[in-house]
Image (cartoon, rainbow, N blue to C red; front, side, top):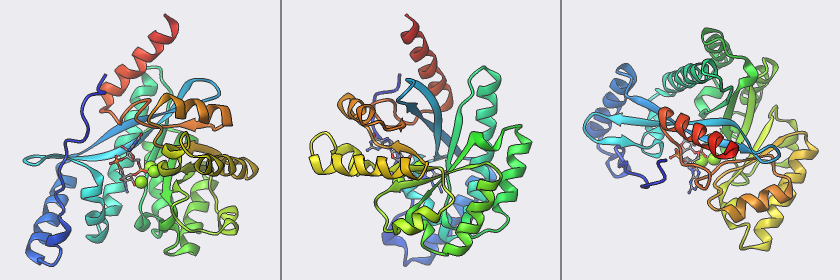
Length: 282
Ligand code: C2E
Ligand code: MG
Ligand code: MG
Ligand code: MG
């Protein structure tokens, strides 16, 4: 399966052009067209449950299938979407596509938890929980089959409102993960008060853990913290078997990373799941 190749995308949004209003307007117009014409596509990266060896779910990662520039990665257009006021539409479209995909996989016999990344503007939108509930209903999916991933820094912007919006999503049963955990600077008191269900330890700690006792200590103590708070710990960015083994020995719950699989288009992810099931039986 598609182990070949790294990123083939190029950046459409060039910071250096930021001062040139004309180019930015063109970029915004193109992104608007992308939303209208459904040029955004999702790739999916599996999450492995270390205690069972089963694939527990997937994370949806957005890409832009640009008509002339090829496949573009989120780092090149997410900030633009945010600053152009298009993030609410983008997130709605992503959740819609992700839930439709999860539904179709469920219909084919595979129940997978779906994780979607959300942005600051989503969490200050008091209507966001209602939009999510409507999309879950539309696709016949349960709230607990959906996890929203938010970064720590995002939570710093308008704390009270973000906590309120997250609280309503949690009350509805939707999972909430803190993404890139350890790279922000929220206090432990704040963390304890947040309505979240998962911590996703940033890949800088995960990728360093097998070569560094200090990095391993950070993983160990984060794991203890997560479990003490009743949260699931996800390790992101595991790139080799030694790291996966070390995480399993420490009692980490879920692992994600290139060693298992890169994010894949849905058809390829399905084949990867089928191959894996066959390999485990045979
Ligand atoms: P993230 O949510 O922390 O996602 C993980 C990123 O790390 C992904 O990059 C993934 O391809 C990459 N990755 C996964 N495993 C490994 C590994 O083993 N090694 C390394 N070096 N990298 C790994 P991607 O897809 O380019 O996404 C980058 C970021 O863009 C995401 O970080 C997320 O913050 C944002 N993003 C992606 N999709 C969406 C979306 O639909 N909406 C919003 N608002 N943001 C998104
Ligand atoms: Mg994420
Ligand atoms: Mg992350
Ligand atoms: Mg990230």
